[in-house]
Image 1 (cartoon, rainbow, N blue to C red):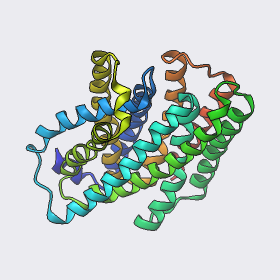
Image 2: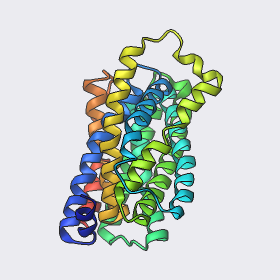
Image 3: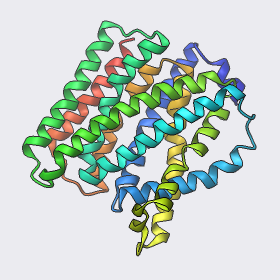
Image 4: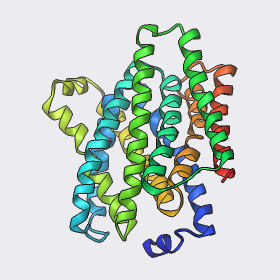
Length: 300
């Protein structure tokens, strides 16, 4: 499997597979965000997901080649970046509705990722792709302005939620670019993925074990929480694994932008599953974000 993935790098077949993986990541990441936000405390939901990632990832470490010594500093950096992302995401979800926070997080990330991919990997966008990115950003900031003007619920926390969402989007870009560097630095991409999932899953269990935030678990029904965590861990493998493989096969910026079609799936999940009020104007703005991502993909 690893040899086949590596053989497709830089080929037309690799580009097609990368596009399919990025779209799969978009769908799964919208599901993942909904599982974390859901009807439970987002901090506790993330805890249960990480516990399952630790349990499920441990046996995978024995199925992949052991990382080379030069990979350990890369993993150390990934631990810090992913911890910052997860903490910011939980803080944002604690202050705003899923359909408010999620589109801004996922939509802000591509702008920073494109810049990072240019600086680190020398990737260059065409004029049409920059137009698509502008369309995407209009949708993002239009959605943010709409939420600020028209949303009457939780207005006291809305501004803070949007600020945290933008900061989370910045860290999304950092981890996307950084992980793309990491997965390209190891001969076997699945070695990077297995160890990444395992090593970056320790933070929330440690936070709950060593800080007062652990009290949030007290009195909660554990069975449905850990069932949600199990499903979330499986979705995480599919979502994060797919987009990381896409960045190994093709351009980092394009994979990151195409993944942000997840905002459309997020709108549907927020409306149909979480029973959040979306409305036609917010759906139109989310669709604008997705349209910008599609222009970027096909404008290259």
